[in-house]
Image 1 (cartoon, rainbow, N blue to C red):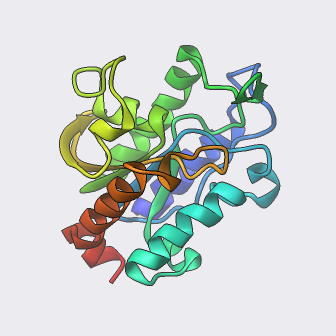
Image 2 (cartoon, helix red, strand yellow):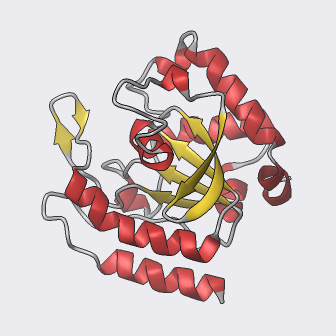
Image 3 (tube, rainbow, N blue to C red):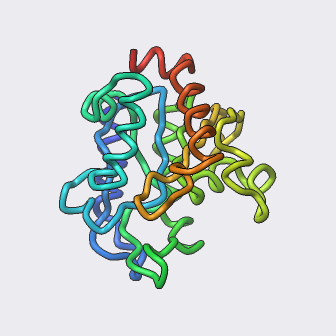
Amino acid sequence: MSVHRLRTIQQSIAACRDCPNMVGNPVYGAPVTSRIFLLGQAPGPREESYGRPFAFTAGKTLFRWFEETSGISEEHFRERVYMAAVARCYPGKAATGDRVPDRTEISNCSRHLKLELEVLQPELILAVGKLAIAQVLGPEVYTAKSKLIDVIGKKFAVTFHGRKAEVICLPHPSGLSAWHKTEPGKTLLKKALKLLSRHPAWLEEIA
């Protein structure tokens, strides 16, 4: 029943054209019933052609992190973890990289996100990248002055779209970012991945 409901939600996502400034069509992961919910920022320019999130360069880095930490393959992860994003369509380019979705675009996509969380009721949310982290932790925890060093390597308890869950934050695995390649980012990333590998939901779904 849960898979059927997820497929219905994803049909609505696929049909959505509410954001005229977005480029291309929505991207979403498999309708996996999981205790773990990965939330990214938005697909990149190549993801639509592959038909799934984190399908290009950033994804290779992300899945390498998981493989090095827990010995799992990309396909195993995709089969066991529900993958979503703050925005489901590619936002297009900005002067310094990909454009950050605006408030209206985030709000439009949040209705899908709320329904997914309602069905799945995840125990663990993996928030990947600053935008996802800010959305999940909320302004009370992740303020305008917050930095990645304030949240990476820690575990948080939140209520997100009415659902209580624990959150582990990860930096965005973009090749344009050096944060996770230099200190203190390298050490904090290892700490976050260690927390992840020991989380009960991870052990139940992945091990």
